Image (cartoon, rainbow over all chains, first blue to last red; front, side):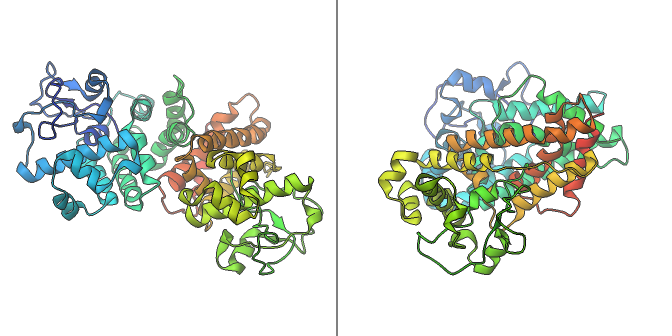
Length: 251
Length: 251
């Protein structure tokens, strides 16, 4: 949801390709910022490799191109492919060296896209970060439907916990970047606002008339507070504990 | 509470002093990181000028030395005065230029304390930030006692809202710094953990046996989420809305 997450299936296992042309670092941000509960049917479950698995396999995590992706899986032609390569480079640079590593020149070098193209389309680091969030917003995300509000809120919280505690965490990297770039901060807010709007259904079907946003924030904000702001270690019961708080907030 | 706040009374209005010797920038972090509900009796209410008022008067906010303070108001002798000057410099540099402006050399120059002294005692930026949080923890803070749990939680949240929305906000500056410095992140966690321990009384007296920390985080975390992480604008009802969530979490 709520999660800038890692569950996008990608069509094939790593090939060890390292050249920028072959690179599709698992569209790290795009996958990282959305649950692919409604993943395209073209990826059969048998062949789908979760991005995290790729990261584990490649060792150096998302800092390395992960897998060649069939050109057919990239809709939109050349412009879309350029964007995907650039955003993959943004994600891998962020994970590798944080905000300081994220320059337009570094993105051009990493992506293999000409720097004048990068400058023309994205101008600066803030615009690149904003584009990453926009790409994440475009990814479909399906709120959970476990049969109870508590179950749904717990599942959403679990997704957030997973996104904030995976190593490396693009979610944490993007939150950190939002403290350096006003454009990234705006884009972060937009992304989560969008996700909360989509997630409102879990509250509305359980408690029509309740203030869905308040309930969702009551449930999710403590997770962000503990893991992103305070950097406390995650405990097993964290997701459910504050889901209960959220569920209690509807009454 | 919960607040890295601004309500420390200081004894006199700005004098326009600009030299480092005369400077006591309202002990910006120390004042900023604690409510002075139990302010020293030596500062009579008549002469006390809230730091925010000083900031408004001086225009350039806490980036300028605010007021000369009688030497008698500084307990602890030369070492303590050096520390205070250094931490004042840390606060004003942070507010002025953010984390990037915070170097040991800049702190030495701003504070008028010799750089070898600063290096010897604090070593690096992380240690300076940690010392700032430690100083804040030493400041007395009294949890509110309004007669009801909802009232107390609302008051705590109002203090957090005030700390996160004042301009400039040392609280926001320190949170931002915690994303650049692991030492600052540790110190931030320690500071808030301490405050939550102190604040537990508001839950315990209203609902003995309740999980005080969960209730406090349920109440406070959404404020941090909205104002510090998402940088949403503060709404009038924000403090009370999530205080209600916290109060509902005891049942």
